[in-house]
Length: 491
Image 1: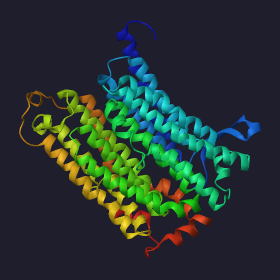
Image 2 (image 1 turned 30 degrees about the horizontal axis):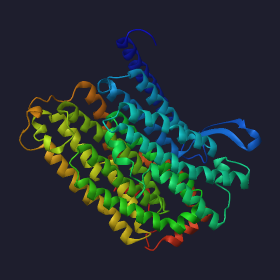
Image 3 (image 1 turned 45 degrees about the horizontal axis):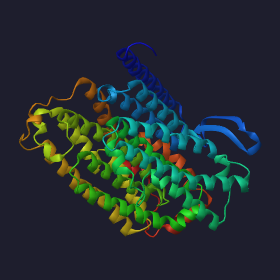
Image 4 (image 1 turned 30 degrees about the vertical axis):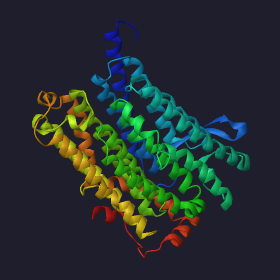
């Protein structure tokens, strides 16, 4: 790409846009061709890589990883569109970094070899750290380094676990390792390594110190990728390599992780309520909801795991939309302080309507995807502990408090600042981004079976087999049996 800076910027934007459109279209085609009734992985490809060491380039998808890939391609497209006017410096480099991040995320979620997964998992740090450190706010260097060091340090524990499994089994192929039987002690140590690795990315309490600064300092298109997709890589890793690969250790220490999830739910909500920075409040809101996902995963029940996956997809869309709504008002006013706003609804009625939909989705209002996910998580947690279900479910109440307080202060009331009085409503490009996200949020709440029917068979095939089914039956302390996930979602 050569020419003047204006020509390079324009060409970079359009190349990135059409590339992301094509890739997103291919992921939708993959969804249409995916058959959830078939066991195992589909669209698989395997080629020799390090054959002498039992390592191959092995990729494929199942019902669990499919929507993680679709979420990645969707939010990449959203990030490129939202950066059209927000990013004005080094545009070519920015678009290259975003597309590189998409590459690593799709590779991560489709990897069927532990070494390939580790390579893609580590590779996500390069573009994401650049996106925060180069195009972020005043404290972007600190936020980028903190994010990189936390995630990289946690990944070292995963590498140790991978090396141990390779030494003792001679392979790093994930489908093969899923059927390996490790002793209880070994599973405990492996789970510890994976929790430290993926708990940082999720993040899981108390491994969340990097989150506020990374979310706050990163530009909105970057923040929506980090919060909407990269944090979900932590949930994916905990499910794939913790719950499903190490069921005995997950059962033994699942209660501890669920308690940490409850701590994240309550602590994140309390800290969010005390914030005066809009973006920082939503960042802690995201942290609070990640605790609910951890509760669902380690309930070891089909309902809980399905709910966690539903919450992952719903939260990825909702949190990305919320950060874009925040960017729309802060970009016009030039401030993120809640006290600088008030009466936005009178000047931006379209934004007020769309923001209300996403706020209600964040709360878990019936009719949105978050409600289905939270309901199923509570049903799964109830089979393990009444108190875990009660305290975890408090996210609906606590979330309603801080999000509605935020909405009231920013959207309603009289116009008190001159900057607000001169705000213009959402542009056609902004509506093109936010309206589809709102429709997806409502679609997931009104017809959740279109999503549950894809990953539920994959979850059921694991939780109903062998050790997982036995451990789950022992874990149930409440007689809630024979629950139809789809009927719960519809009701």
